Amino acid sequence: MKRFIYPVLTVVISVFAFNCQRELSFPGDTNPGGNTPAPVKATIQGRVLDENSQPANGVVVKVAGTTVTTDARGYFRIVKASLDKNASLVTAEKTGYFKSYRTFQATTGANHVVIKLIKKTVIGTVSSSSGGEATLSNGAKISLPANGVVKAAGNSSYSGTINVYAAYINPTSIDIGQTVPGSFMADDKDGKRVTLASYGMLAVELESATGEKLQIATGKTATLTSPIPSSILSSAPPSVALWYVDEQTGIWKEEGTATKAGNNYVGDVKHFSFWNCDAGFPGINLSLTLKDSKGIPFVHALVQLTRPGGGWWSSSAGYTDSLGKVSGLVPSNETLLLEVMNDCGNSIYSQNIGPFTQNTDMGTITVTASVSSLLTIKGRVLNCSGAAVSNGVAIISYDGWPRYVSTNNSGDFSLAIIRCAGAPSTCDITAVDNTAQQQATVNGIIITTPITDAGNITACGTSAAQYINYTLDGTNYSITSAAVPDSLMGFTYQQGTSLYQTSIMGYQFSNNKNINFSFSSTTAAPGTYPLTGISVQNVGSGVIISPSNVVLTNFPSVSGGFYEGNFSGSFRDSLNTSPVHTVNGSFRVRRY
Image (spheres, helix red, strand yellow):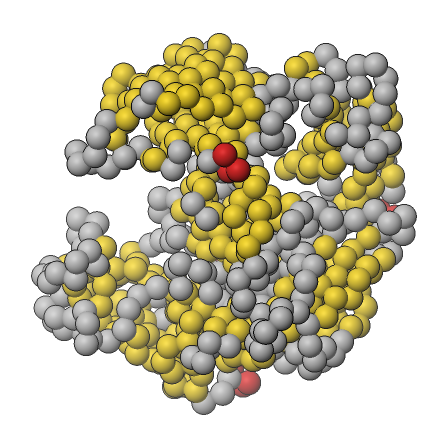
């Protein structure tokens, strides 16, 4: 069966960055959409997909100064990240793809995002002296002026061949919710937070023949021709605003106008980024919580809001957090059809809501659906003495990625999952006792619908203690799971048939401790391997000085096991201009 990873079936207008936000009104904020900063420390996790909707490994993901790398499942997770309840930003970078942006509204729970990368391809070459055009197969066009391009670094003059990289982003495509840069949140020319109705987007980058970044010269403009999808051509107005992605925030900014010319919008731009031909509309923040009939929250479920009766301004979408909450910017003064989607893109529950004239919290919505669509996984975590573990977590690995569920005072855990036909028939659960620092993994638990009861799982037998003890330039640091549970993680992904990439990281932001190091190996086994990257105390390695190695004494074969060993080396944080830093340490970190 062909499955789509978190598809959005109709046009996403505000990417409804739908993760929870408890407070929906802000004192003194006269902007109904809400763009007043509201910092929060919280977990952010998600998946990054390639252009074929397959997991993308080795993707560098950044959130507010913290950097991690995706594993073989395209999965990443950052705990205690610096986020914002109104507009948090995640970026994803991988060689051969345009830099991706995702904006969302953060909650104190575990936030979830999905990002689909856009392939970066040369569509043509242009002479800097004469200018010219580069055209995509669908007719999208980038027209560069003569003598109108400079080097991006320093704005110095450039003479030579210009490689034009571009991609068209169709706002009516099934995957727009994952591919849209940022979201459809935007700030108009007056600074008002609005939602966008897109009529087409372009990603454009310019490079020299040697890979230098190029940009349009001051005082010059380039012309973009962006096709209008046929299904919305008749509703496209004579002109729309042009919007670009603010790379610091991931929010679209209004700048310029595009005019309808036949089947296209044509407009001039002063710089290159992602450009969007859109109409902007007022919005409100909407919040709701999804639970099943027993009051168990749906974790990381896709929620879609559609304007009944069609029309181009048709849909918003996003994901529930670990508490079943979802929140985001949606069109105001519109009746909306709320649908809860499964992973195959089918609606399993729907109801009409709205219209809304102000920020609204709808409270809890109880989702009812066919037995085959809903799955509850539950159990109880006990300690080595057989008593309930109140300070624990169950890590449930199902359908390709892990879900973290805390235990209650009775040691119980439960979560509700929306599934589709062909979903896996088993799951694995790692039960962790944070107090005793003990754990155990139960593999191959048989899935039964609507309820899978894993029974009692004794978190005993394997030490759950994790740590990275390290010294940077003579100063000692230590990050331990006893101090901050869930503050360390490691993963390995396979690159090709004979190369393994492993990343190990730890964060303890309250005490300004953080380290992230990686190494390559030709086997998934203990051994001595060269360091390929390190970032420690926010000092990143521009150049690693050999010899710098990781000595791995244990290489876990499956999730739940532990990487163990030590490392040492030296590095500069930039080429030849910075002092040499020395680092060494030991570690024991769980594999996810």
